[in-house]
Length: 495
Image (cartoon, rainbow, N blue to C red; front, side, top):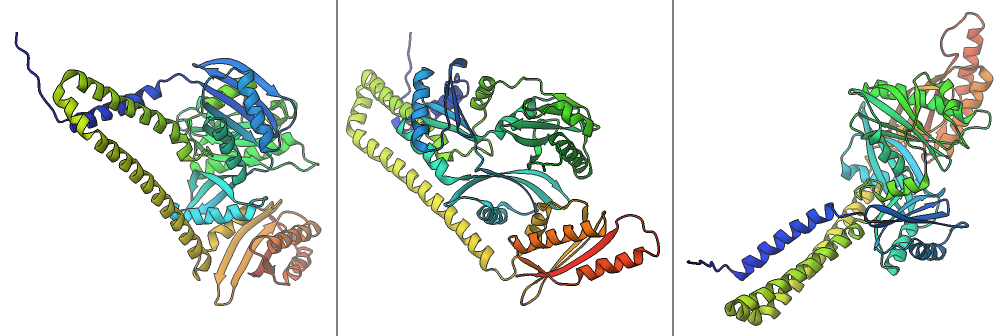
């Protein structure tokens, strides 16, 4: 019996083995059973549940309210002990009244042009001192406008969470707002082909609308502002749902045949909303149970658009495992070579130190590459920010129209908005109509003028618009009119 043995280059063998090992680790990690500590911090209330090998083990709730980092660190430490959690991964869902969610409409533009505009908007609306962290999600595109959902958090809050996890030797996988639960459930709802569906959710007193297509992807996210005292919450939600359905029908040419409702019965029920909406509203299939939602929060994918965990923190466990596996493989290869052939043993004995130096140099080069890439991105953002501020020909129409869309204008229709740049200033002309009497029209326009003057653009409206309304009142006494009662034109300058 004859045997054949082919001698290959040791370097080639090592590279091939490491490549196969990397593929094996990646495939193994995808099917690895879930072991994670799932935590929710909802307006200071702390709950935790340990999941071990895809099975719920124990849950624990801390009494009282957490407002500072040190009590939060102690709460996570106690949760690990009470739930008997043996692992390192942690997932955190957060709801905090300090955080901000916005819906914007901007003209279609590239990512490099969009980032400086969103950064300026974040700096305008944040309500705390210090830097802010933000994530954005692109929604529906219609008539040259891009719908954008923006989540804004204090950077200090995220830094405190990262420091706590580092001190407790935990790997943070997910740090997301509570609204991520609602978004994740959209894909579980049945939708007919060519149609859309709307999910209404009310968690922690916050009302949220999410519209999605048949494939379960969301294309419109809205957060409902608190209702006035004289309007019931059910009626307010019904009105906004009807507006959302009309917008989807007009802009996306999609029909909404059914609506799903997931709410807190102590604050709002389906029966309070249905009388104000003609489309059928169905109860969400799953009864809200916080142990179940802690499970859902732990299984959310790490690549969510609203995951505030920094990318380098999310990749750290994989790098650590891969580094350990590579080191173990190198040791195994060296041991095998020593046991099988003296030639390979001599080769490694002679070049072992050189191999370690090369590996260390490669790691140092990778770290330098990442550092310079981060610096390049930071410089690019700063340059775009400076250009956006100092440019004499900067575009103001899109952001100003987006700002007008955020103003509450009851019984008022804006028909035309004109912005003209002169050498000295911006000229603004707003034309519209109202569907109410003279007294209420005056109040509505005075409130609009005050908001324009106090807002981020500081529009000074010229006098004369009242004379226009009074002239319409005199002419209305001689003949009957139909449609809007008063038409108005506001002219002014942006100071």
